[in-house]
Length: 150
Image (cartoon, rainbow, N blue to C red; front, side, top):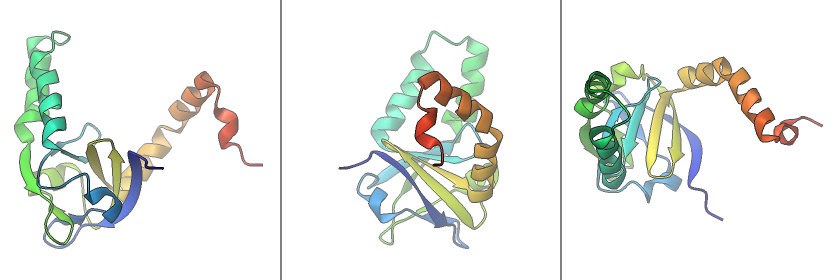
């Protein structure tokens, strides 16, 4: 069985490169697009995912012109092309490293055709801060019993 999502710990080296886990690399070859994520992480996408992402912003009638402008400035105008090197690393541009507060220890999250690169401590804090929201959602789904300790 193949999962199209998952997470793995990684590290950022002194040159700002993050090692992409081997199990994710086959999906993220060649040129990729990196930009800011919503919750202070680096967002890496395949070109097809980027085009879909960008077109949703540009063509959406759900946001007003002022909202569209801030979304463009926050996400689209921060985007850069990066590439997975032969050692399986992606160089995170300094502006995005700063935005995501990336230091050494990172958490890489894969969902379909995108990767999120978080500072490990920030990711744990995000999960802790949103614990009640997760519990509420599990209750609505009726799946809370799956996660109970026996």
